[in-house]
Length: 418
Image (cartoon, rainbow, N blue to C red):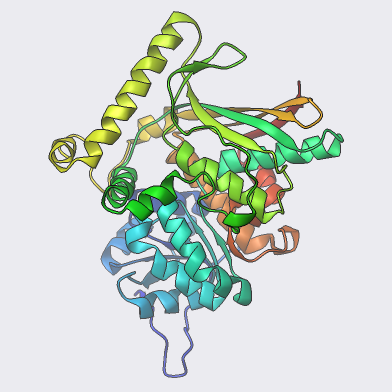
């Protein structure tokens, strides 16, 4: 039987756990649950949550044996009481229920008010900004860590720049100035990702204020007026070449990842450097073939985003894009990979390069590892985590303990001089 997430007569919730996977019947939720079933330490109390008891039971039955006695929790973001009870009955909520602008705020609020740590996979600037504005103060008061962007959006970016800044500081090289991430990857796309992107594009199209916010390079700053006037790289532009001769095109995640990294810098009193200029691009290879790939990707990305912003074209795209709840198959997930090279220059002129890489489709197989290890860090690494609460980023909430966990899980995080 599933626990119905409602408080009893005394206001208490009888079901208790260390971690609740909310959205366990969704595509990424199932992958996260499978990762935890294999990698969570013995004795970790994990529950699966969602709207349908029957579907939760079906998911549980398909998980590794360690999960077969996990409790089921019925909760729905459309029922604030059930979500509040779910949050009150656990130490950490990991939510994969998106689009987050549509379903996420009740979960953030419940965790902020209950003092329950929270982790999500959002790549939505508008959602994170609203969550900050509405619930950061409550979370700081309750002690909750609200950690957004715990997947491929934006763990590799955020942790790489953290490691670069700490290495430069340890070497006496000064703060970071010009930092450029170039991403390469192989993987697929899910209906949930498409739905989230579609929702943000629609909000920006309808609302001039949302459009201005999304375009602001410091959209997620904790103190916009205190941000330095340093000009930031554009999120998109024509094909270009790095100093290593790699042709690049716009990276679809750059408008979100860059805001997360800049928020991390500001939350740490601009410890990375007040002159930090941070940008991201997609690597397309070297030589004529790399140049042609960069042109094709730039053109295709612009055309795709434009089509998704226009209702008639969007209706045609919906016939070929994956539907919500679906995603790449096991073969695609297992054969995928990601690699990010992050070049940095410091105030002293010294240069460093960080590498973040890992096996598995970056948005799904690798993301399940990132979110899973972030959740286990929140549940079990309390004494080692940065002493912060409120609306945080992976770097500011979890920092090097998460780096260590991801290395142990088979991911690469390295920094080298030169």
